[in-house]
Every structure is written in C-alpha cells, then in structure tokens.
Length: 595
Image (cartoon, rainbow, N blue to C red; front, side, top):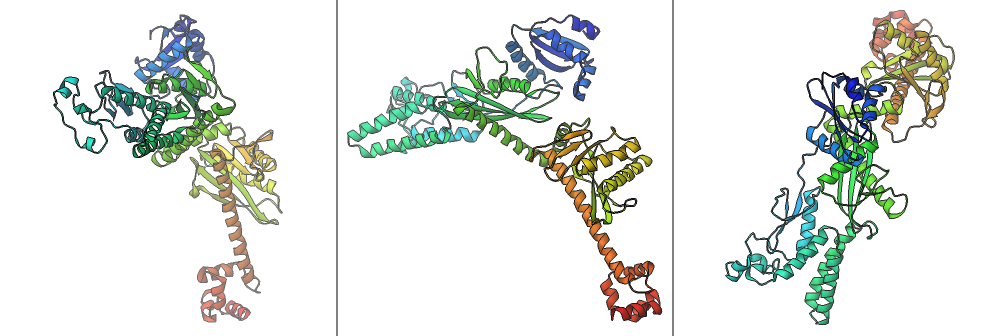
C-alpha cells in the first residue's frame, strides 16, 4: 500500500460508513478515525488547508491508508474506540486508562460473602461497579454490614458439611455480626433475601429494604417487643440517612447516564454521573489529551463509549449537553428545564471543578504544560497567528507634562523577564502628549531591536485605547513592522481589548487567564513607569535645592551627592569636609546657606 500514490488510494475508497487508519513509511499507525462517508472524510485531509500545524504534520507523514467498512456510523464509533485503545496511535485523543478500579463482589456460593476486590474472576460471582474510589466502596459496605448481618468466614458452607456439624460459630456470631449459618442457625432462604436487598441497595434502590424493615418494626411493636423494634428503627435511620445524602433529584429518574464536557486548546474533561432511583451512584471525570483539532462533539462521542465500557454501564438513556451519534438503541435527551437540567448542570460543575483542580496540580508538577496551555489559550483568545511567548507592554507616565517618561516591560512564557525591562526619557515631545510619547517610544524600542538584530516579540500590548494604539501603529508602519508583530491596546475603564483597524473592542471573560496576563503586563508597566517617574522627580527636587545656591552647578551637586549620598548629610557636613570635595570657596557658600 505504501508504494501506491495517495491519490490512487483515495480514489479507491468507498462512500460507506467505516473506520480509516493512516500509516507512515515505517508502517507505524499514526491515526484512527471514523466516518459516515469514508471517501469524503479521508479526502478532506488532503484537499483542504489545515489551520493547525499538527494536522499538517500528520498529513505529510501519511503514506498508506487502510479502511474497514461497517454497517452504520454508530458501529464505526465503537470500532474506532476499540482500535484507538488497542494501537494507541500518536495523533489520536488519549483515552488510555490502566487504573484498576474497585468492585463489590457477591461471591457465587451458599451464604454468599460480600467484599471489595480489584480482580474479576469468571466463576459465576456477581460484580457491581467499578467504583471510582475504594473509599466509596468501603462506605457502602460499612452501610450494608451495619444493616445486615453477613458472614465473613471463607468456609465451604455446603448443606452436607453443615449437617455433619463440621463448623462452630465464631466471635462474629457472639457479637451479633453473623447469624450462624455455619451451624444451620440461619436459613439459606432468609440469607438470600438479605442478599437480594443488598443488590438493590448497591444499585441505588433503597425502597425494598426500607419497606421490609418498616413492616418488621411495626410487627415487633405490635408484639410489644420494643427493644427489637428500636434496633430495626436504627437500621431504617441508617438507610434513610445514606439515601438522603445521595438523593439529589426526582426519585423517578432511574437508570440514566449523564455526560458533560469542558475543554481548552490541549485537553478535554468529561464528567460522568450514573443515576439510579434519583441518586448519583457513580461519578467520574476523565481527562482526554487532544492531538489534533478535535471538536467537543468528537471528544464526547469517544469519551461516552470509553467510559460506558470501562464502568460496564447498561443505561438505555443519556442526558447530554448536545446531540451526538451513538448506538441506535440509546435514547439521548438534551435537557432544557427542570430536574433533568439540574442534573446536567451538576455534571458540568463537576467537570469544571476537576479541570480547575488539575490546573492547580499541573502548575506545580508540570509547569511546562501549564505554560503551553496558557499560551495556546492566549493565541486563541486574541486571534493571533502564533503563541505569544514573548510579549512587550508600554506605558507613559507624566504629571502635568513634567518629566515625561515611558516604560517597557517584557514577559517571556507568561512571566515577567525583569532584566529586560526598559525606561525611556521622552526626548522629542513637549508637554503632556501621550499619543506622541507612545509613538516616540515604540519607534525607539523597535528601531534598536531591528538594528541590533534582536528577536522581536510576538505581541505588543499598549496601555490605552484606540488613540495610543494608533500612535504605536504609526511607528510600526515607519519601521516596516506592521503585520509582522501583533499589537493590541487595553483600555482601563472596562478592560476592553482593541485591535488595529477594528472599532469594536473585544471583551474577555473577567476570569480569563488571557485577560489576567494582559492585566499583569499593564500593571507591571504602570508600576515600573511610575517608580522611574517618582525617582526622577525626587532627584530633580534634590538637585534644585543645591543648584539654587549661587555658584553651585550640576557638576558640583553630583560631586557632593556622590560623596555624602544625600542632601541631609550635605547640610550636616562640616565646612572642612565640604572643602575636601569642592574647595573652600564653594564650601563656605553651602555651609552658610544651610546654617
């Protein structure tokens, strides 16, 4: 296949639903995809211009195309998921999860034991789960054991051995945790009734157990057995308390799976809630690593298939945020109002919360991935052609036109690079003219970078609205840099972002990380500029105090401050110490002035 030209391979593809596989020259599988129409979908890789660099790289590597025709699009989805998990292609979404999840086992034996396990043995035993944490399993088993007396020994309780009197009751019997099935003190039918109730509890249905215990409590009360009735009442309380904690919606909502998705440029997070009798009996959030420009629809499709297989879900109805193609027998509901919408919102909150927790963890454990994600998000939010790894921000500072200065701050990979910060004294502008000052500083900055062949930033941020942005653009035009460097302005009032040639500003979400970085840039530029301006005014005030003395000029002032460090020390110095620096004649003038 590798020797056959791609156009010939494309021409031979059928127009049926199916799964396609891309291979490189080494015969390594690169990508697995599904299609409603194989010919159209696969041909699109080679005929359209791809926005994302990874897709372009993938297409360049493809030398062979294989396909499998299936009856329907939903069959293609199932096959695609299985092949991705089997081959783990480099350019596919990462769905791999080797984690071993815990199950609750009801052992296939007389007087079945119930216990947690991570191993599934095909011996006829029943397995419920898997659960997302052992803590959940232990909590549920503690509930069950507090309500139902169950055996914990691993004896073979066959009828023959019990009748032969092979076993004796243990401490668990005397503690009331077991009813002595090993000595025939508990009937098998009675024990099996408990097991059936436990099956329902594990499935989230407490109704059967509650009904049984309430009838038993009433019967004991009628017989004046109040102490025994009280014990039953306590069991009812335990069950109702557990149920109340897990019931979050209408109890009529039964056997439903809920899926929602949140995503960014590099990852997607799919939350799964499983509901039974109005209770959430399982919650899990899966993290999927994007490899190409997958849509949320594609990711949710794959995620649903993978998660349902992993957790052995047989639910026939799904609540989703939007329609996706799945197996025909599954009913898909997109809730808009009421309890169903509340469940969907709960799932979405769980997905968002998990995403934020992962961000916090990644920031500590994998700072490179954290940076890459933010840079990709900024590129998307600000409509840039490349990630803004190097950003520069400009701010002007002057008070009533006095001592006009400007500041340029530099961020690398979203963090301040303080050694590259620069101050500017405005040289060509008279009076408080922010627009002209911005034009001068931007011109000086990038003329120097170009002359010295220094790397240019991917993004320039101007502190100000349309006016300051237009002034900065004039300088970029003169230097021939317009279009080579992205540039935006940020106005202070509503934090709106202005783009060249666009009168309508962009309003980023106030919680957006892109906006936070731009605000950090702007605040750093303002702080750096104000500090420089303040220092300049202080220095000018000091110099003017000394230079106001007749016969004392700028040079003499510099000599004195170099020696004494401050005007206060100059004032306190003796005439002899002053004379050592500037001579007796000038020393007398200063000494008499301040005395």
